[in-house]
Amino acid sequence: MLSKVYGSAVFGVEATTIAVEVNVDRGIGYHLVGLPDNAIRESNFRIAAALLNNGYKIPGKKITINMAPADLRKEGSAYDLTLALGILSASDQIVAEELERFIIMGEVSLDGSLQPIKGALPIALKAKEEGFKGFILPKVNSREAAIVEGLEVFGVEKMVEVIAYFDKGVPLEQTHVDISAAFYKNLEFPEHDFSDVKGQESIKRCMEIAAAGGHNIILIGPPGAGKTMLAKRLPSILPPMTLQEALETTKIHSVVGKIKNMGLICQRPFRSPHHTISDVALVGGGAYPQPGEISLSHNGVLFLDELPEFKRGVLEVMRQPLEDREVTISRARFTVTYPSSFMLVASMNPSPSGYFNDPDAPVTSSPMEMQRYLGKISGPLLDRIDIHIEVTPVPFEKLSEDRKGEGSIAIRKRVTEAREIQTERFDGLETVHYNAQMNTKQIREHCSLDSASLSLLKSAMERLNLSARAYDRILKVARTIADLENTSEVRGNHIAEAIQYRSLDREGWLG
Image (spheres, rainbow, N blue to C red):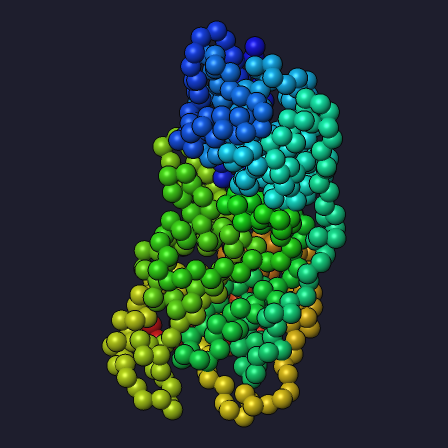
């Protein structure tokens, strides 16, 4: 007998349907073909024990299993349930007329219970696209798959439930997710709020500008000045995600198995990798490519604390993803592309001791040591960071005040209004949605200056010895400041404020 069951393989953030053909014939043997990896090859031991413990068996005949397309490499243990049902159907132990109308995935334990899988959301999207009736998978993953409307999703805990559904018509419980309810909940940020930040009004203003225009930002200051505290609160003032952004973000986290019972990810991700991270872990890759930290922070924030402590090679591999907002990983047989449109927030001490330029602290690092320390960060990487701001310690009077600062909700309202202006401005452009993404042509179009503003910018660049690369960055930031004030023209006061936010371009820092 020959039977056919369908599973799915995930490459990048897209799924490919896999047809599992099982043929049971006279003879003895178990042949699994179609480029399976070791986890799939070992599945016959798991399946044999699970079937035996649930009153079924692998027939003592010649079993040939083909995973088509046969030239595409398959990996992981998620095909256990697919293979088990194919074997039962082909050996006439069950009657499963509707087997081919479902995508079936799940790792089987020896007692027949199901373990979670990775990539449930991309698989569900592909199943709907190809017209399958439903998707049967472990219950832990069912909520993320049920986000897809128009596809019946059945979350099961044991293999016998699936067997009973096909063989005896015992109904399975369908998983339903109210997408609108999931999408609009959790818009408050009780854990991290800007009202907790005492003083630092100028830095909070900087963070607001960065959030409004999607600008990358670096905070420079001594230990304990509040750099990490401010960075952790940045997601609380970013505009709420659109449904499209929520689906994109959930898809990436689904591929690495970080969703489980969560369903749709509604809040912007905040990733803060340790400085010992490798380049592969940061940008993605490996023998079987997986998304890295920059893709896991897609539509959110990537925070690199103590930037000069990261290996220089690790920071250099970020340059292309920062520019293109996607990362492409090439292997001999295939190429995968992961989205990586994130806001980079970096923090650093101004010197190895952390107290250079601080008048109240003893100077323990010479200017030469400081230059060597800052030299770990390359010019091309700094070129992709729009805002550089110095963070100074908060005085005791401010720390001991009872008065709370402005909360995240009020700031986010202004940020969202500024983003709406930008969305309207760049309507029709696929690759540009906010000011930080503008190229030179768009900067010239949307950031035209009058003669007084041009004169101010020229004077500042000469007097403060600002580098040429600072020119476009200043214009982009000035455009965002103008959007926050809801003015169509970029004026002199916007330029003057934007110039303040280029600390590292000044002589005496990296000059």
